[in-house]
Length: 186
Image 1 (cartoon, one colour):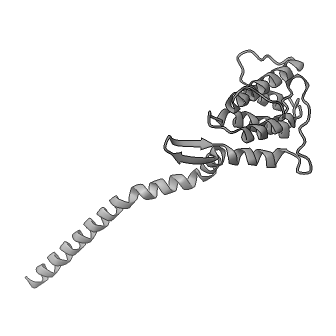
Image 2 (cartoon, helix red, strand yellow):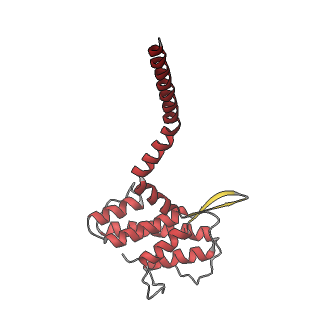
């Protein structure tokens, strides 16, 4: 009788312990799963975060700025000893020109000039351009070794910058993008 009570009490304690353990695991399984997924994809996630730049929260909501991406591109591709704007055939954009367009329209103009530039470069090497984006054409030129990997990366960074701009872009930001564009060598 005493033995049965002892066994019954031990069984009840074990059942209580297993129930607590089960509840504990149930509460921590999702956070652990999320942490494992974040750890597995940490390189991809950090790349996405780096490409986003910074965020601003204001009365109009949350907006993304591309200041950090712009500075990163400047540091990666412009020569440190010289920040002089160089001429670029028919697509030259001079930072000193007075434009009647808003900074955002100037950014769109740079994006269009980049597209025209890659089209012209692709046509020089008899690459079919119809139905292809500027990114696709850049990749084709890089694969065929018609442009260097560095120039391709530079071009893709400029495309990314011009695609990430919004109507709140400032004139100094556009001037930096113009400087980057004018230093692109194909």
